[in-house]
Amino acid sequence: MRLRFAAIVLVSVLLAGCGGGAGGTGELPEGDHVHSLGVTTDGELLLGLHGGLYRSDRGVDWELVGLEGEDAMAIAAGDEPMFVAGHDVLYRSDDGGETFSALSPPDLPGLDIHGFAQAPTDGDKVYAYVVAHGLYASEDAGASWEERAPIGALPRDVFGLAVVGSDAGTLLMVGPESGILRSDDGGRSFVKVYDVPTGAVAVDRNSPEVAWALTAAGLARSDDSGRTWQVVSAFDRVEGQPVALVVNQPLVWVVTEQPRALYRSNDAGVSWQRVGGQ
Image 1 (cartoon, rainbow, N blue to C red):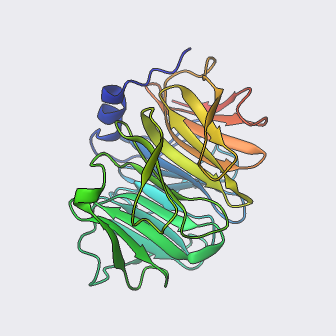
Image 2: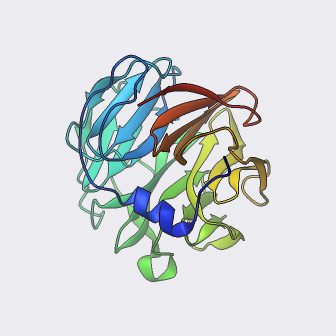
């Protein structure tokens, strides 16, 4: 099917309600809304819901590993330490996700975080889009933060951040109305590079100059650190609305809603295999 991705549809999916639950063999965990996908340094998948954080080695059997009843809206697990952020959520794990510690840094003005990203070349460098406040950066694994851009200089529909390329100061910001924006000065200013509604963005730490995004036109890819984009898959054989992705080349993983399912591509999005679903 052609990707059903009007901006209003994406917003309604992203802002769906809260819940919790558990998953069984071949099923994804239950809950009101899937927010995020991640992959650990040892290749395990992470799935963030409004209700908890789950882990799987193959995408079939899922185990609740933390944040039960909380919102795992963004996962940054490309390097150590790993982070999970969301609505009033900011956690760090220094042991690959075995345990989590809540962060509440005094110089971060809020914890309603709709976008979070970690530099693929330096795990201590992270960015957070804080609702009603703006974009903030930390160079010491979330212990201290500084403002990079006030809320008035940024779009209000941010639902994804990524650090792209070998320079930890190059960022991508995406939204269902604003499309894809790019910054080459550490988030102090942004330029729109792709004017298509976009719900998620991901970068493979093994190829940090290659970025991927879920857009209204399909799965888009950039091979030049987010400067230019081309659609590589229209998701013709994928049921449901793609809402989250993660890349661990040669694999690309996508989660859909309505119906909820996990898909895997072994060939950069040319073809897709359904791994599990409701």
